Image (cartoon, rainbow, N blue to C red; front, side, top):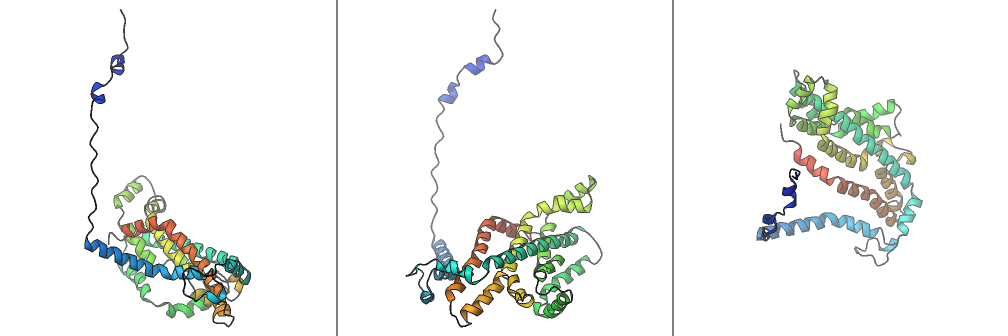
Length: 307
């Protein structure tokens, strides 16, 4: 007598039902209906895009033109040259200015994100008397014009011996920003509090809850804070004008102002140098936006869902 293993017959017999099962019919794709409203919206979006992108296209085109053709208002240069991108590095220490700007923007973005997140976490998580009043005072600082505190803040940095250094351009962010505190607080309020209570039952302290749970869940809002502050610090001209004297400490916006004074309205009229330096300054912001646009949209969509 032959003993067959269990399941051999099942594995060897072909599945006739599966072989003769007809394939599922392919559902035809539904055609999108084009309505007059969609056509109008598409046309308006196209026009708006062209209006916003035209200045940069003009700037990019002018950077490849010789001196006499910069303002001919042609998007396609009659004479296409690359010498402007070589001459701008000879006429100005662009590499040093870019390094100073990168250093300032990174420090400013990181410090304001960290400090604002900790303050926002305190307002969102802890319950204490006068919390709403104190938070209202923080928001009220946004209504205070920067010109009001400009001189007192300058005197403080001057007494500390920090004038003509890069420190005043980013160190103020160690104390947070009212706008970012509000933004991050709204995000923290949207997180389930039961998650934090469960972590506290497991033995986690307040700092561990903030660092290991709240901060990872707050990643989209933190990325928005970093992008906003990076853009603000990269394009900031007022504070470099106030605090910087030595050209070796210039950031890119302050350096562009110096190039404009020398080659623009200063009398030499080498506008091709100015527009080329402007393109070099603008391109990093465009690259940053394209790299972070996914997180940017996600952070905007998920912030402020709870008051």
